[in-house]
Length: 172
Image (tube, rainbow, N blue to C red):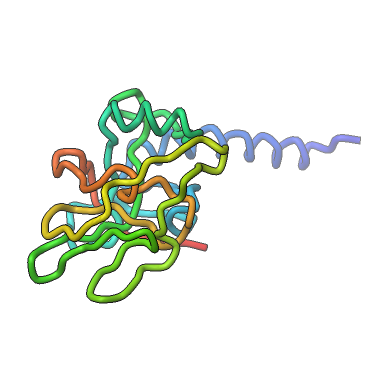
């Protein structure tokens, strides 16, 4: 038999489940459920020294990404999707970024899980960005997930696409 205590616990759970997304969307906090970076709670910042960035994909890239099976939550980027959260790396003449068939190489070290794949998780064909050595641009590169949709497919980011930087607060 349903007790008042059980009903109150259930009601409290529903209230939190409804209020939490609204609270996070109006605060500097955000929850990342993607496996391209550690799952958990992050704080939006303006500190360019923070490892992660939230950015919007250009519509042409977003359209192509959706055809490969990329699903993004609703948000304020073009196409009505949320910003993508990834680690970022800045290329320079002193610290170039190389994209090879084995993945990204920075400072002479191959980054793990960055080899371009010919097909997405859903089996859709993927086209990688041209292999080469790059000396400028901000690159979104996930070393956490070998299936991440990142700069190995769309190249460096337009700086205007970066919406915020992010710092992990509590992650898995």
